[in-house]
Structures are given as structure tokens and as C-alpha cells.
Amino acid sequence: MTFFFILILVFLIHIIGNIKNDRAWDHNLFTNEQPTKEMPPHDPLLEAYISLGALMVRKDSSAYREKILYLNNYFSRYFPNSHYDFGRSFTESLKNPIRPRVISNWLRRKLPHRKQRLQIMYFLASLATVDGTMNEREIALLKEVNTLLNLSTKDFDSIIAMYTQQQKREKSSGNSTSRATKLEVASKVMGVSTNASKEEIKKAYRRLVKLHHPDVFATQSKAHQEIAEKRFIEIQKAYETLETRWK
Image (cartoon, rainbow, N blue to C red; front, side, top):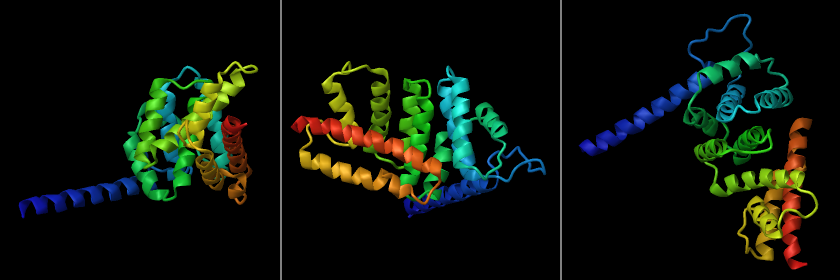
């Protein structure tokens, strides 16, 4: 009986904690800030993006200016109607970082669809690779957030591989990248093993098309469509690379 009571108590504490966390994010992220006439309306989703972006910048500030420019452009395109004081919120997030678990718990409940949570991962991966590389600390944060958002290891590997494939293609000249490396990276983009059959690869391709084809984002902003097109190009390149195994 005592054990059962403890289980109920732990469950209630967890529920209450989630409610308090949601209310904090929905109303004002930073408890030491009081709304004023000069402050823009609180946007919890944008605040979550800013907080995660700040965590990523803290992992490698070597390309600080480029990353700030990327963040400014990203938020201007994806949150055009927010009229948000990005600089103020970002500075606060840098000085007082919020744990990834706190941010991710709110995002996981507010973004029920997997593709919505994947968008966050693409945002963070793009930010991390602004300088053309991704260090171990950045990869560790990406992996942590991926897990906290209830995304799979296959999702994580595919995202990392997309950016790796793009970087290798942009840096390489001719066929300087080995065929084996190209096949390995392409397999991760597609979410299949390196010895996957032709049917398995086609099945994976159809699954990714349903998720990332630009037509899926036809009703969204032009910025969303452009990002989707870039992702789709990487999927196409990966599929074409794997197709060479049968030619």
C-alpha cells in the first residue's frame, strides 16, 4: 500500500511540474522579467527557439557573428509577425541558459507532430554548421535534444548525414570523396543500412518524400518552402548515390 501511495505521489508531482513548466513558458519564460509597454508580446515558441539557439552558440562561439546573422535571418523569416526583441531575449538566454530538458519538455507537449519537432532539429543543425563544421559539443547537444524531443536515433543520424553530405559536396572537387564514404553518408540520410536492398531504399525514399517534399509545405511561408527544397535536394542526392550501386 505504501509503495502504491508513493507511486501516486511521484506521478502527481510530475504532473504538477509539467503544468507549472507549461504556464511559465506560456506566460513569461524569465521569471525575473516583468512585462512593460516597451516589451513585445511574449511568444513562447520563439522563446524556445532562442533559448535552444543560445545553448548551441555557447557550445562553439568561434563563428559568433555568422551565427547571430543566421539567427536574425531565421527568426525574421519564420516569425515575421512576432515584432520580438530578439537581441534582448538572446542575451538573456546566453547569460542565464535554460536546461535543454526544460525547453524540450514544453516543446514536446506543444508540438505533437513529429515533423514539427524535426524542424527544431534542422534549425539547430543548420546553426551548428554555419562555420562549415560541427564539433563534439554541438553534436552532443543535438543528440540530447533529439532524445528529449522523442525523436529516433535514425532521425538524428539522417539529420547529421544530410549536413555532412552537403558539406562534403561543397568542399570537395571532382571525385575527391571516396565512393565508400559517399555511400555510407547517403545511407544515413536515407535511414537505411549500407547493405540495404533496392526495395528497402525505395521504401525509405517514399517515406522521406512524404515527409519532406516541398509540396507538403505549399500552404506555409516561402521561407519554409525554400528550407524544404534544400532538404529535399539532399534526399535526392542521397538516393541517386545509392542508385549507383545497381548501375
